[in-house]
Length: 252
Length: 243
Ligand SMILES: Nc1ncnc2c1ncn2[C@@H]1O[C@H](COP(=O)(O)OP(=O)(O)OP(=O)(O)O)[C@@H](O)[C@H]1O
Ligand SMILES: [Mg+2]
Image (tube, rainbow over all chains, first blue to last red; front, side, top):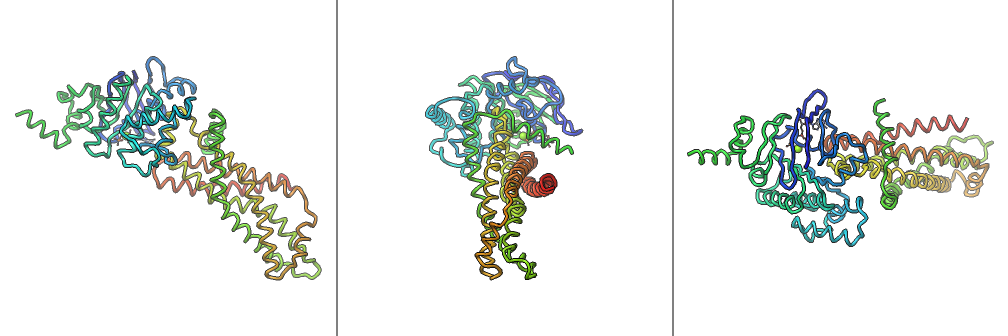
């Protein structure tokens, strides 16, 4: 479980995050959604300490991350896997080395055990036979899957995914969404997915936090998101023509 | 001023909290190979030509028949060891290796690879930068020694081909009254320059923000800042040791 309390962050005099609180439970896919530029990426960067919040707390279970010292933070970070918005694969290393990297750095596993583990997670994300390819040789969807494999290879307890399916076709998107959901349930981890794709929300959003201009406007789940009355949320949901048609059909 | 403070904090982080020796050893060797390979050709070409040019120009300036010809070789030797080899190599090295370091780290920054290391609980500054600084420390003096030899050889070749000095005179001049401290001083300079170029370029690359355009800017400013720092250090060291 990850709990955030009253997180605020400004860059210069521009308020990016305004007093955000929430609880992200274990074993379900938690989503943070909102339009581009509302501060979703900044919020998860605050959670993992890549950005220091001006105010507020982040707890991992009952451990206070925000006020932990360097050693305390490293201990928590070793339980975190993160998929970055752009993949952030090390471009001087091939797929296998990328995925193996956390094991090399953070464990004393023998080499053959590491390779077994790497192959296991690569298989888990449907990538076999690409071990020796360089990141530049992969398609966008493959890069995301390598990123996911690297994030879960060290048996992370917390998984952050920043827009795992942006820029992918609808079929691949759904596969990646479902992959994240399966991994979350299978290993019973705490997963937070950032997205602005309503398709993903309806597919996997068991807990959904909607952000608008740095504030939390609404929280709930995919089951009750359609009944939300908040205007900002409705504008967001029904910005899509498809969703508008669905709404018209269902109100007939 | 603020960026100088940030530079020293950066160095502090780089030299503390590092990981296991075996990881660093491998990275260090990789960096040595890369730094050596990427700069050896250009350093060789530049230094050989500098030696050649120095010989011919010195001969041109020494018109008096009272001055023996071997003095040309002596001048070439002292200028090369004391100033040309460490400094010209520094400028070439900053242009080649410094800009490489800055653009590599800059790209890693803007593509969030550095963030990815941090989230894994790895001290990214030390993991990425320490091997580069140490490798430069080892490789740069070697390049300077190579440059000095090639430069003196270039002078020999140019002197013979143009007929301004005979081989015997040149070799006599090279050996004439060699002060050992010039060599020591050249090595001191090499270590200082190596540290300045690698750390300034790393700093510029590591703190890139923005996009591909900024990576280009970081790499340019790595070169200009390193060169300026090297020239200042050159002057200060000369003040300090040669007075
Ligand atoms: N390091 C920074 N310095 C200054 N401003 C920043 C910084 N990082 C983000 N911002 C600003 O914070 C705002 C929110 O950015 P953020 O990346 O969190 O958006 P987002 O919700 O993730 O959008 P997207 O869906 O497009 O990824 C933007 O206006 C951005 O310009
Ligand atoms: Mg984002």
